[in-house]
Length: 90
Image (cartoon, rainbow, N blue to C red; front, side, top):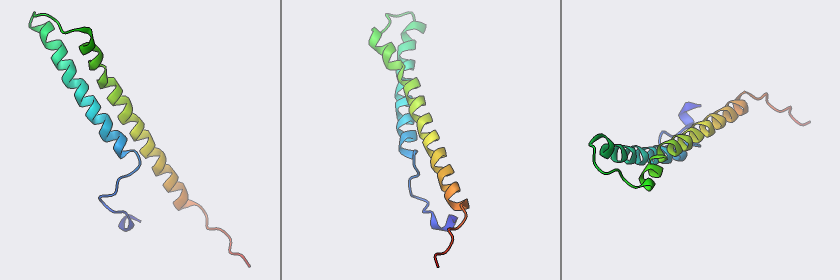
């Protein structure tokens, strides 16, 4: 079976995982930028920067949805491979 799978083919859920990683990274950078003034005792950023920090959680959820979608596709593929052959018509 493995010889039929192309190494560069995208599995279901791969795009969601990549998008989730990007959103998570943006949220992580926003969190670092938001927390820096608090640690340096300078004027804190406006509220929208704290809201932008929530992108870490959103990215985590998007990536998690991609992982679950990938798992579901793998299970469907395994069920189809292990299904008994249909009886031949006479």
